[in-house]
Length: 430
Image (cartoon, rainbow, N blue to C red; front, top):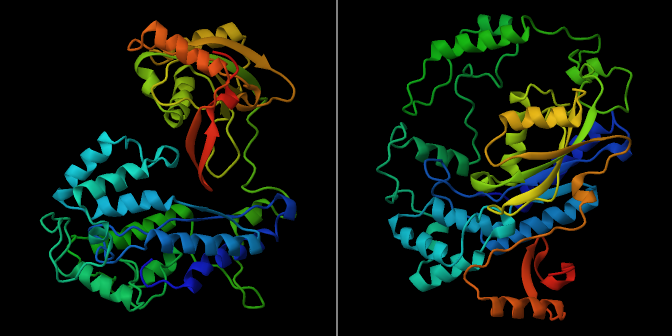
């Protein structure tokens, strides 16, 4: 963030360590894991930081290394964004119409779904910038507060000068309390009794958005009423707040059991392994999107999936290795857990009756005992390549070279950097 110091960066790990220490009060040490996620700040239009400079790739790498070293010392796992993705995002976020040619040229050089780290073609962007004479620092550096901005003509409902005021407050390390909070109060009231008794004027920054302050006050009371927070909680004899977190109320005297609270039993889980096809337009459905599509198919089929017990319950499913977007598939695997006890043929009939076109379930089997995920079970993948533009002679020659064991080097991107692999290491036959 703008104005941050190494001490601020280290605070990310220190805060995560405090969270872990709290968790250790209720969990067995061996079952507790804390992960801190840190993203690179990208200044965006229509925000108080739209004038701020973005850290260079070298500075981001230095801060990420600092986080990694501190995390290793405190046993905290760290995740962060690829700084190269943030670099491209920063250029485009505050870019002007002159970048239209850059986007087109990068596309022609192979840039596609570059927000995915594994397919980022960073060199396509840097080469395009060099060829077009685009100075990235023009878009990533500090912008004069009194200068004109490419997005000044866009009205987002804010009064002129509001963002400048917030920017100045931020650089002076001054906080802007939340809108709608009673003037002078440190936090919002946490119960109806105090909220209704406090008739102080609510904070409004006159940003230009026409807020109804009376409605905001009423909505706060309505929200607290729905929570059942009608009156302040009593203080105990030692003067400490008697509030006990919800998970402690439910997990009382069960220190080493996992959070969140146990939900009612869903019944016996029945494991099924399904084989399906992805043909036609559905081949353009990504792996992540397919994970959202399948639960909808289950609901349309009147089936009830077993849900995970986390804070955000999700259907218990396990897919095989992810396919590249656009690749057609004839025999993909997915495991599902259902509360429904069905014969495999009956399950297939119900699924195919409501499935998307091209997504056909060809086989089903009931699994018993210890079940390994399809991604672990699948050891080989068979590909069929259609090469209409190659003549038979060239194709046979290429296959012969592969079978002869000639090395086929390929550079792939990994978290630790680029790495060269030999494609033939994973080739069984052709």
